[in-house]
Structure formats: C-alpha cells, structure tokens
Image 1 (cartoon, rainbow over the protein chains, first blue to last red):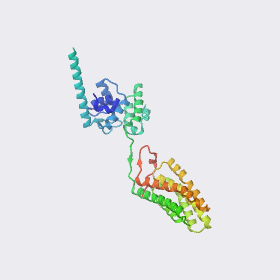
Image 2 (cartoon, each protein chain N blue to C red):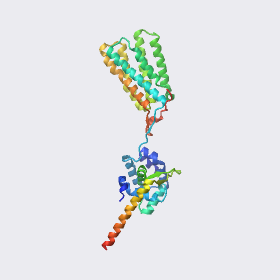
Image 3 (tube, each protein chain N blue to C red):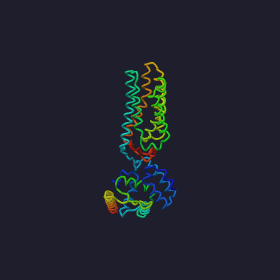
Image 4 (spheres, rainbow over the protein chains, first blue to last red):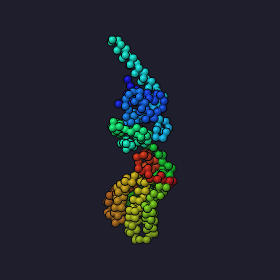
Length: 106
Length: 243
C-alpha cells in the first residue's frame, strides 16, 4: 500500500505519517511528532522521526526550510505532494474495497 | 540526553544534530525513546542517509605550481640516480642539487608560518650544505660526505615533512612518510661517499628512489587539490599561499 515508499523499508509507515502531517503545511520535528500521534494514535520516537525525515529529504519528498533557533521546519516538495496523494488514493481505494467486501459478506 | 546524539555518525550530527538536540530539549525522551534513538543511530551507521560531506577543493594556483615543481624535483631525483646507475658517471652531483633545489622551491607558502622551527633548520642546512659544496671548504671526500649528510639528513626530512604538510598529509602520515623514505638516502649518501664498489650502484638506487617517489606523489596530491572532509583533521593545516 505504501509502495512508493517501499525502498524506505521499515520507515515507510512513519514516513507516510510524516508526509500526511506535512500535507497541512510546514512543521518542525516536535510539531510533526505531536501531530502524527494525534492523527494516527501511534507514538513516533525521535530516532524514528529523524531516520524517516532523513530518508524523505534524501529522496526529495520533503525539503528543509531555514532554521528558527534550534527548530528546522520541513515542507512537502512537489514530488512529496504527488507521492502522498498517490499513497492516500491507494489507501482510500483499498479501504473502499475492504469495506465493500465486508458489506457483501453480510 | 543530548549525549545520545554522539551515537550518530558525524555527518548525520552535522546535518541534524542541532535540531535533534532542540527536539530532545522540548520533550524529554522516555526509556522507549532512548531505545528508539539508539536503534536509529545504529541504523544511521549502517545505512547513512546523510553522505559524508566531501568538498573537492580545487588546488589554488600556488599549490598547483608548487605541486608541479615538487613533481619535477622528485622526477629529477629519480632520473638522476637511475641514469647514474646505468651509465656510472664520475660525477652526477649537479642533477642531485638541481632536484634538491626544485624540492626547496616548491616549499614556500603561507602554511610555513605553522612550521617555523623546521623551516629554520632547513634554511640553515641548505646554507651549510651549499657553502660546503661550492666553497671547497673541506677536502674532497669530506666535501662530498658532509653535504650529503647535511642536505639529505637534515634538509631532506624537513623538506619532505613540509611538502607533506603543504599537501595536507596528517601529522602521523608525515612522520610515517619521513620514516619510510629518509633513512635510506642517508645510507646511500654514505655508501657513495666512502666509495663502495661499483656493483653497489643498484643498491644505492633502491635506497634513494623512495624519497623521489614520495616527492612525486606529494606533488601530484598538491597539484590536483585535496578533498577536504569534516572528519579530515589535516584541515587544521593552514592553506598554502602562492609558491
């Protein structure tokens, strides 16, 4: 389901959460962490957060903005936005199919 | 807790260290977070997402020129001894002094300020050796032997260490280079001076060639420009000025 992030390996899921969080606008590390926990209910550790950020940045899916003191905001790039949209549409189609099958079974 | 950042590779710390510290300051990591950070640090070593910063430094004109002169010095040195080993001339002192002169010519630069003592020794050694060689101040045998020892034994290691410093070779590398190359020309100088049998010319050749090859290699390194990385401690060596 997260095929475009497949090469990111075990950080694919946190990466998806981070992309989704940045879909709202630029955020720095701490804001991403709290937002991801709010939207997914999953704890995002600082190590995992920066491992995923580094991978996303290296692949050009996010870009770092000018630092504000010790905080550095990140934003989605055009490629990141396209990738996020593709991922979410895939997930949405998957969810619809799954729900329909559940309905069919009843 | 910020000490956890030291677990990460240097390149990673340079890129993310400050903001990561900021994050840890904003939210004190739990035991679970500490485990997460340790695992992520290990991952960063095995699968670095931040490539080590390598800043290819194009050699300054002065360094390129100095590198070319150092190469010429090394080549002249090697060629002179190879030709001498083949043709067995009565006297081949001139090309050797030419080689040494070229080597000395490659040395000047702003970086020398950091090496005042070896520079002073080298200058004194050069003066003494030239005076002895050209002033007929000693009997012929001694006039060959003494300058050989002074030039090769004092000026040689000093000059080699200096050109290595100019080529941003780290301190340990400079000592190693001197230790591996310089004792042999001194032995060779003695051998020539005391008139070992002609069959030992090949032996002398093997003794003196390493120093010439070292000059050529350092000249190439200097002329090409040095790749500087944050982890390269030789960055501390001041950049060379015009030769």
